[in-house]
Length: 74
Image 1: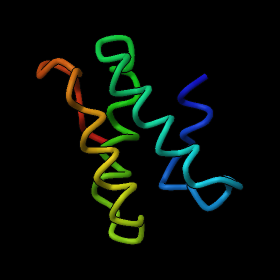
Image 2: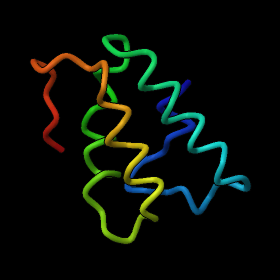
Image 3: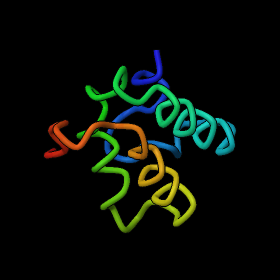
Image 4: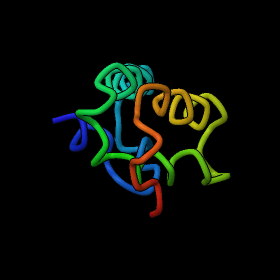
């Protein structure tokens, strides 16, 4: 469900409420190990320069509980 809300390739523009994206990123960060499948998408969000800084920062912070062994390549 979080992956669907997140979208791919920084598609936050499709959301009617940008604050919703921030909540989704926080939820992914709270999920930690359960969200390891979303690490490539988070990496994409964090590295794309056309994403707003607050979205990029939220994506980086979402990694806080993802184990270091998770594959973060996109």
